[in-house]
Length: 354
Image 1 (cartoon, helix red, strand yellow):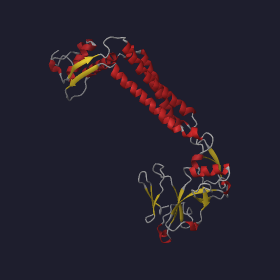
Image 2 (cartoon, rainbow, N blue to C red):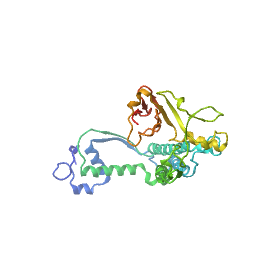
Image 3 (cartoon, helix red, strand yellow):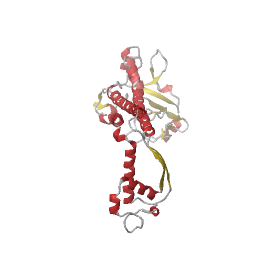
Image 4 (cartoon, helix red, strand yellow):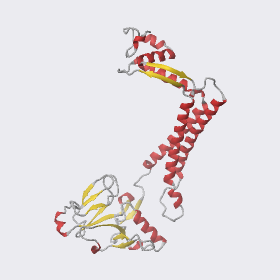
């Protein structure tokens, strides 16, 4: 072969200086490496193995260090799986038994997931530094599409890289890598799939129209026909009832107030049972709504959707705080323009179009 093959993309007898397909098939890995370097304009300036003498104490110590990090990644990956499956994750109110364990659930997800990635990453970096041959190469830039001759030579390069890494004879590192990546992958897969396995329609609650899935209900859903649900404002005063009933005159024309559903059966928070009910009311995602009072002179601008003509009470209109874009809390309100704003993604809603 001559040096004029650089940059050519085809093989065969029709191209001077290049091997035929038959010659290409019979080439050894070393010959394919040399050919690939010439074709790609690559010059190997320096290449030496990290451990010229195999089996030294230093080499074994380096091998154990890499294995420790990979096994640590597997340990944290397995921990992620166990935490996701068995750690208490359902909400527990503040001060009740099990509240501390519940608050640790999300931090443990992040800690075990992050440590698994970190340990595997450190193990991979150490393996590259300790065992991949030290090499300096220079490559010329050139254009051209890949052809069969390049496919052959790139396979030879990848095979040479595998052999040079000595991973085949390092059983401890190979086993550790398999355990680490396997546990990490399994933990990540279960955590990802966990939210897809649970049936969101399975939990049901009694309503005035029979049992319904929780996702179709909120604190405003009547539990029986004729049930009275009051609009209540949060007091925010410790030691007192967390909610007080709203009256129409409590909100000025053009004003907005966040209100919550309150039933007489919920109590005033003085008992443990009542405190629990009111906590659920306050924490329910779909419970807080914006109560807006339209100015009398602006009532003529209100446009009601068909079938919702009776959804308001005089000048009072209620809107959920759950943004229809991505579920963010859209609680910003422009009094002069009746615009409801979502602070997260700047969505805007016209309160005059009901």
